[in-house]
Structures are given as C-alpha cells and as structure tokens.
Image (cartoon, rainbow, N blue to C red; front, side):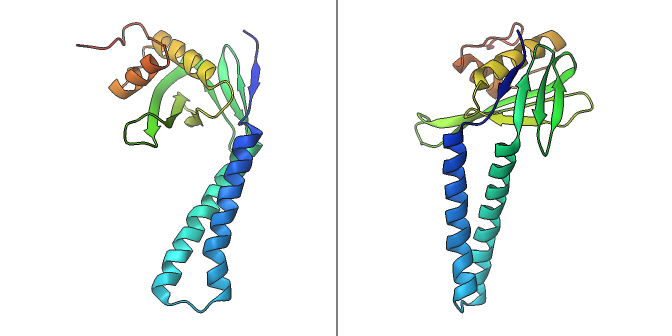
Length: 168
C-alpha cells in the first residue's frame, strides 16, 4: 500500500462554512445593532462563541490533509501530528446518531500512538473506512484493548479484530 492523501470533501466544508457563518451573523448582528437586555445578550454571546468555534474548527479541517501510509497516519496542517501504527496505544470508534431510531448519523475515530496527540477524524473524510481498517489492524497487532462500543461499531463496518470478538 502506498501513501494516500485524504481530505474532507469540499461540499461538506462549504456546508459547514455556511452553517457557521449564518450562526455568527444571526447571533452577532443583534448584539451590534440592537439594544438587548443582558440575559438575551448573554445567550446571543454564547451562541456567537459556539458558532465562531465551529467556524474555526471548519477552517482547521479545511487546512488539514491526512496522509495514510502503511506505517502511519499523518495529519498535516495547523494542528498536525503523527500516529505510528506500530506504537498505537489508543483507539475509539464512536457513532453519533441524529435520529432516535439510530438510522442516521456519523462515526468518529480517535487514534493515538505513544507520546503523540490524539487524531480524530469523522466519517465524512474521504477514505474513512480505509483509516478505520488500518487502525483496527494496528490495534490487533499492538494488543490495544477495544471498548464494547468500538467493537460494535467496527462490526457494523464489516471489520472484525481477532481477539476482540463479541462476547455473549
């Protein structure tokens, strides 16, 4: 396997930029243009802060490129780091549902290697399945214990890690 460059899709980033900008404007404009009472101002300021953080997060995702190789996963960008597969010491695959019946949602993978920062990617990233599969192989090789939810989420993606099968 050669190195593969992965990025978040442009369509996803544009949608997130629009959501963040809309929230910043809708929360910030009343603060600048109207005389609002302090309780409403506090709520608007909190909303403004959350949307501004979301805008910053989107910009970071836009500027970050992930390089998946047989030996590592590199996040290259403003908050860059490296996960070395042979030193993997933590892995968590989470599912976040957007519907009560869990029929829609997204997954987030968090991986880290000894001495390095945690890298988090979500399922909108191109090549997400490949990263999860490689992380699962590394977890098996390094003996990383996986939580019940991570094992269940791996199974839902069709990935089984030896020694981590479901216990009945």
